[in-house]
Image (cartoon, rainbow, N blue to C red):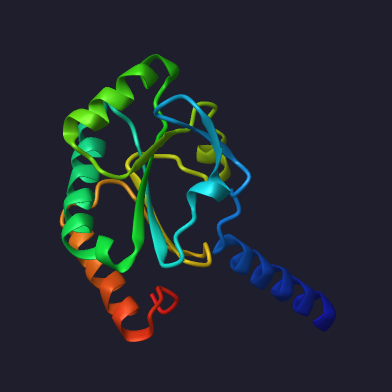
Length: 171
């Protein structure tokens, strides 16, 4: 009985550790120009990445990403943390994404999850959905839904961690 309990506890701990690392590095996304790129190539920041999943026809998504963008530009970008957005829209909206992003003046990388592979791999069930990865691609924070006002708090935590230890590892 003791062995079974130890084995089950070990399996649970392994699942928790695996769940905290970014495991979708091999997924392919499409750039707004139409070329294919591996998620592994996108996550090149050594400081960390704010990854935002969104849909173009969802007002909460666009407001959320605008708020995160403004806070990121004002406070976090200088620390080397990248902001990456992944549009998970239906295929009919893909042609609208690039003009929309350009019209908003967003100066961060935007990709399209054309087949929904990354969305499924990351278990994204709602939009907007924000994930914070450290430089080692460990998931530090998951935030499903609209984070009105919370983007400032997230950015403050990022800055504090980087200033204290030079990394997001302590977040």
